[in-house]
Length: 167
Image (cartoon, rainbow, N blue to C red; front, top):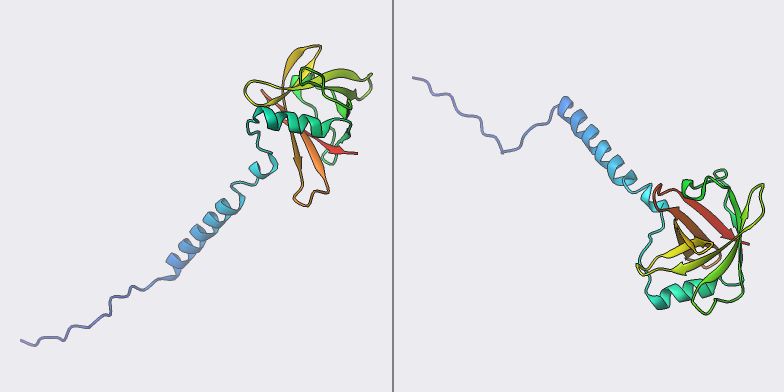
């Protein structure tokens, strides 16, 4: 009986062309998912609850300022505001005694509407018209370099957003 010598392998597996193609495709899919999974959330400013001091600081910061609609992506409307195109915001110079900030809301093709901003119990800044709360949450943010500021109106039901830039 002739015994054939056994071939010794060093324990490494060989990878064929089809396996390389499958691994490459898997890698590309994972890269795509990792790169773009938070693409849409990067444009949504977080609406973190504000304590009373933070809410008052934001409203004080807005006092006496004017803002215009950021229309780079067209005229955005919110269903919560009856699809009105808000063109601009002009805030009163000081907060009222009850902590509200009066605002004149410019509407395309109509006269300005008087409203107010107020921090609610949940820590959000809410838009009011005629002392009636709207489902619109308001946030303020500034760029890292401090050169630009943005106000965001976010619809409570639709989650759509309108952006306003400081004039």
